[in-house]
Length: 251
Image 1 (spheres, rainbow, N blue to C red):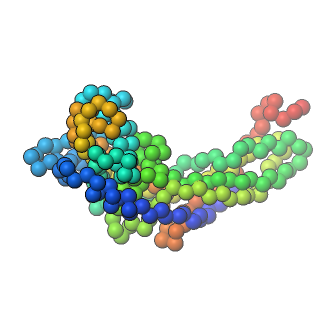
Image 2 (image 1 turned 90 degrees about the vertical axis):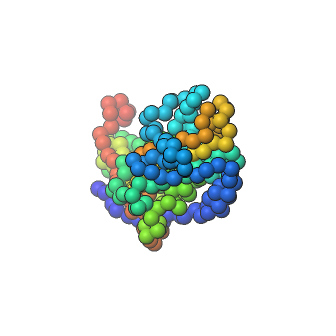
């Protein structure tokens, strides 16, 4: 049994952060997009690499991809004054609709050990979140999230969703000897491009470039819920039911 519903999705406006981030650092050249998904400087320097080419840990001469994303978040949130960063989407900035994401369990299992059908009330906290291909959770309620909103093609900009949690209650019947939980999934979309970052300091410390000013992650992908023009997100909710395992119900 799968039900399709829509859920309201709040939009958080953080244009002030973007404006502050854009004007906080004016000491260095802003790289421009060039062929192959790379970024270039005026002197012809080309740079950029996929996240898989970066080291797992930052070290002299190279920053980890995870730190690049975290430092960009900090810069866009106004927490790092010596860093600037930006994103150039592939193509015209139109998100790719990828359909419904994976099912997520949102309640604990209810075990029906009685001799008859039981009705259980499930309180399900459904979270619509934004993520990226390098880090988990760092884009939620942060600068990267808003950076993507500003680069989405204007005609599609209303569809870019923000993270939010809503709680719904469902009354479901569970067959005798079964256990069950509620699960849901929602429509998602992706935008891929190049994330670049410019460090004002090149020392080997957090918030610094470990020997270089410029880095770029090619093939950087951000995933968000699809927000409809009326502010809702289309979801599917289902009851996942299976036989109890031996020993789960008292004999």
